Amino acid sequence: MLNPQCIVERSPAWGSVPSFGQRPSAHGQQLAVLRSLIWGYFWLLIFEGALRKWIVPSLSAPLLVVRDPLVLLIYLQALRCRRFPVNGTVLAYFCLLSGFILLALTQITVGIGGGPLAAAYGLRTNFLHLPLIFIIPRVFSYADVLKLGKWVLWLSIPMTVLMVGQFLSPPDSWINATSMADAQQLTFAMGKIRAAGTFSYVTGAAHFFVLAAAFLLYAWAERSDVYSRWLLWPALFSVAVVQPVSGSRTLVLGCALVVVAAITFGILNPGRAQRVLVVTALICTAAAALSLTSFFREAVDVFMTRWDAASAVAGGVKESLVWRFFGGFAEPFVLLPEAGLIGKGIGVGTMGASALLTGTLQFLLAEGEWARVVLEAGPLLGFSFLIYRVWVAGSIALQAVGAARRQQLLAWLLAWDACRSLVTEQISQPTNLGFMVLVSGLCLAAMPGNPFGTRHSLERPAPAGERLQ
Image (cartoon, rainbow, N blue to C red; front, side, top):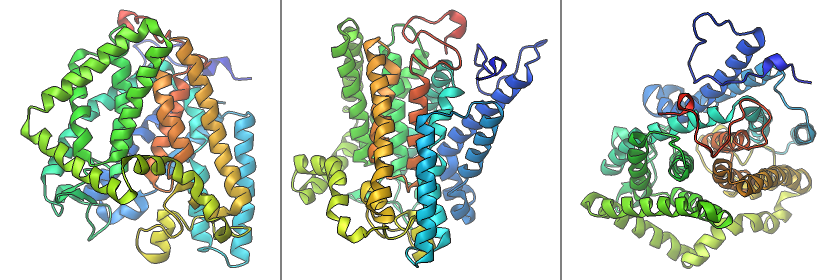
């Protein structure tokens, strides 16, 4: 049983302090510390790339795992506050972790893989951050999710300005620095780089703006004023501008998936369809207005050049998109004979182990996540780990469908990105891993059945004192 004193009825804004004369209980203070640690995880996720590229590039390698100690502190604090979940999902996680540890020891003993350090990094990649998915909904209330979304939307504005500057600057400019010395950001067409914002690589920016798009569509489709229009209009244009500027098909397709989710919600809830149509019209209006500028037209031309080139290599647009999604599921079966019974070594397929073993960042086994996991751990544990991730994604998807049927939009929008990431994300890239965990946890925290934190009605107008103006 959870100590009821550890459950607070109102969730203070991040960084706020109790009103004068109020003295929170010891459990309330512990919960506030835990909530602050999760906020710290969010801020490090956003700015660790900036630390590695611009502020302390000499510490780029250790900063690759800068969130790991914070995750351990979160787990310790969650245990103190009795917010570390104990259920079937978590027990299955620990069973898988035990199996992978035994497999890593076996591989090291028989001389398979990259040695103890590579195995340790592989175990860290696969398992260290996953429990945070289930802790976030036991700490964050619905109000906390909205506050984090507000920060995401505010950050999207300067992030877009930064990415526009990166798009306009030459590849060797300081603003386009990478986290590795003597390296440049990837180019995508006509000498333009894939703008990464504050992140070390463009995939971080892609995940960030997909999250921003989810909060943006939710706020516009909501009946009440969730966020101020002074925030929503600049954020709308920022998300629109960054689509071609990023040079990332992942970003564009991810944001398009959020729009599809909103339209699907309108179909499932005809009474809300009008608001969804309004959101769609706003997006079209913003795109039309931006198309009048020469800069946006140039960015679109460059992006389409890259899109056409990538599609031509893959045999066409249809083949490119289909293989991009479904090919990753088939690849491990094609490569299964290469994996052997116990795999090629846990961690060998990660970027961190690649840097450790070869001094360069490259895919030593496979670029696809499913192929990496199976080649590292062999078919038995490899597919077991992938099935576990599909199981978690399926659980989130079922809850999201229930939320949509109850006309509750935010969890539905977040679930589309969370489920996709859980099933297909290449988590050996630390930023990808961070966003997979964060978005999945936020999605669960926004579910109407979440028994922890403040219970808000997701769709009714909030009282004046609770609105995030």
